Length: 438
Image 1: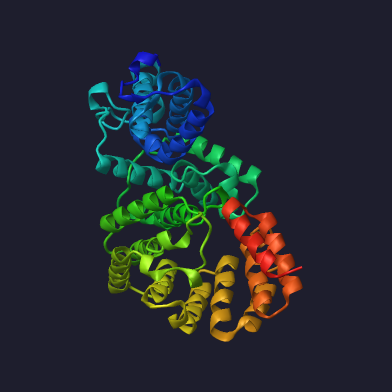
Image 2: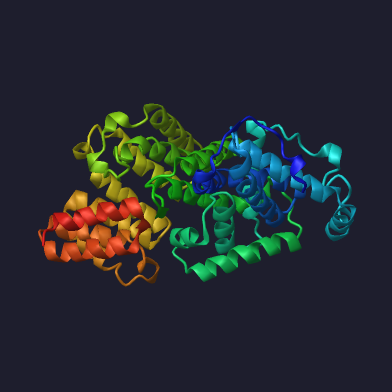
């Protein structure tokens, strides 16, 4: 695409000495804006693989132009407009348009749009959200395996790197990379439409959609890598998607359960990080900093989930009920740990996983003491999925510390610090090493 397609915006001057800082800023902004850019472009080209490539092209253009011409005031809008102009260039090419028609075999209404049907480049926030919802349902199409759906959605919507996805899903990096590449190829080869499905098709994809929205939120809530303990932008995107999904599917208890869970978890975000960016444990958080509006929204969503539930509570409703226990407690000591442990037991029976068992062990340690919980954690040490999971030795170290077994606790905290790729988390764990003495 020619450079003159890029819209002019008021710019901030960039000195040649700070070119490296500009490049870092570009990459940071792209990471935050990539999901919206990919979703907006996919609405035009109807191919998530091509949309991701065009978004990357916009990043390259920014890296080339911004150090010379200055940084636009609205960085996200610049990236979106640049990527969309490149998408329009693709649609204009008659050969590609004809090939798409032949491959898809659909009528003109369902084919890639004519130029006069292409959405306005001036963005409407609601339209952006709609595009994100379309993107998540497309990435969770049943033609893909469950593992591929999760990996692709975390890549496209979460903006996660292959390494971060691998950490989030507890899988090797090469395996995750292959899943992403094959998923994009499959969607293109099978001509999967870029849309929010209806009826049985929507229900078939719902479980995967809920899972990936939750994983995106978790990566924002406790980043697996990087310098920041939290990434609020990812939390906000996940929360917005969950709210939209609840509006779209008002009779689905698990949808409301996920929305409730995210509202309640997000309410604690401001209190989870100290003045220097360091993590703050739940017991040390200033509950006055918890967002009461989000807590009320979470309680309301949980009430709706229980109202429309047609059977036993699902995993997201149960997790929301656990989060609600924390939100109801005026202080850490007032927390109903026995109820939380019981809810985790129900969750483990409904949706068993080693991570759920680890969380249940933490609740048991508070309800029944660290000795009872240590037996549960020791049973998880042979779990292959938790071999590189830093929270396993972190939890075990805390239990040993509370039991006065400081030398063993120190070794566990050291191992946890070596496993994490988040700098803030590593600093916190090394602090725990120091608490254990020499």
